[in-house]
Structure formats: structure tokens, C-alpha cells
Image (tube, rainbow, N blue to C red; front, side, top):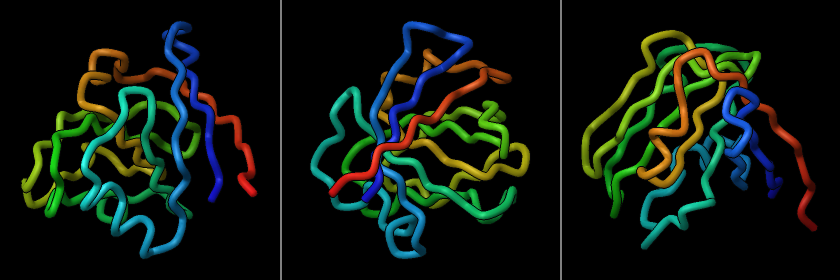
Length: 124
């Protein structure tokens, strides 16, 4: 699996490490059934194109709330939500290509229009 180091160019103090989920199964499972999410870790659900429907998430079988950040193809923040466990579904306000799922306490770290940067590492 690939690890992504994520920084927010609009908030220079922000840095986090996330796993990249690209396959249907890895995106569907996301953080389901995990017991906890560490404060500086997350997951990026990546699509091949921008879409409201494909970028939607469900919170079924989740054990904790999360911060969800939707990004467009240019890695610009287009929506941010506090997603509650067991809520059926969340959709972005606009079409998104990436969904960043983080510890719920990170929600104050993002504003609409923030520019993020991904640095990819290949795990062996």
C-alpha cells in the first residue's frame, strides 16, 4: 500500500500521514471495523475523476466519528464535514476526486479553498 505525506499549504503547521485507497474494496472498507484512528493518521480515497456520487462515503460499521475533507482534482478543499459513526451517507457539496478521512479533531485545520500537497511514498 502507498503512504501519502499530506501538508496544507494554506496552513503551514499541518502535516499528516495517510494510506492511499484506490481499489473498490479498499475504498469501500475505508476505516470500517477499525478500533481507533490515531490523531496523525488517516486514509485517502482516490477516484479517477471528480464526482459527487463516487466521492460519497458511508459511516456504517464505524466505531468513531471522523473529519472528512473532500478535494478536487487540484487538491483544493471543496468541503469539510464532521462525519458521525453509523450515519448512512455523506456527500460533498461539489464534485470531488479525493476524500481524506482523518481523526475528528482535525476538522478545525481545514477551510474551503485550502491547497493541499501530497508526497507519495511506496511501502514495500
